[in-house]
Length: 228
Image 1: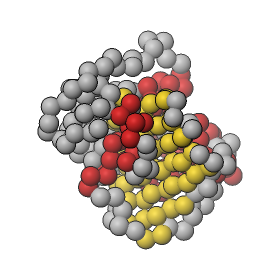
Image 2 (image 1 turned 135 degrees about the vertical axis):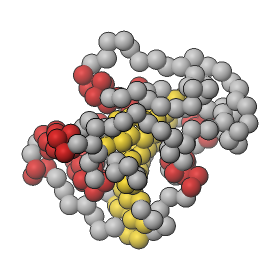
Image 3 (image 1 turned 60 degrees about the vertical axis):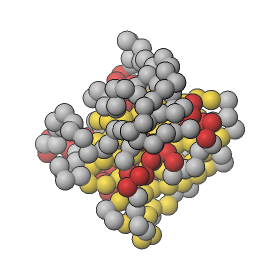
Image 4 (image 1 turned 45 degrees about the horizontal axis):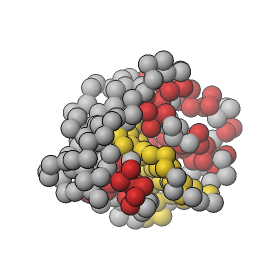
């Protein structure tokens, strides 16, 4: 079970460390160093205290026009050209994310109501950003900020938060095209500064949350859950 923030954490475990010889795809998915609470990095989620918040300082991000154009060009290339883009669905107006949902990956993954034993087994590690389903890989040149996941007999769970200098609607259009191409249904809701793209296919579900930060960067959260 997850304990309230501020309580001491227990259940120490070994961190799942990435290989020293990561292939280019993994290197691109991880990009910048992951940032999580250092007291929690090596723990699974049993009795953990989550103190990391999205708003804490980050290393400077490259948000120059040339960086944005380069990211867009790579995204279009991944889709096989501009013809691979699909119009975003009409957005339903909602209240957006609550504060406890927006705070970190734990808040995001809770929105999919995963089995508790699946959540308890999840671990923080940068490698989960590279282990997202192919349809949900992060936008080109995105900077991974926090990642958690698990491969368990009863489920596969991923939750990743990353930053991009590209506007939210462009990032979501890329993700929308990718999930449609993989056979997912897709819906969009908008409210309180949030865009939420969500869908499902068989026993797999996903949700992508995006918002613009005061810095001008876009923060994107990706959660995927497959149950067995």
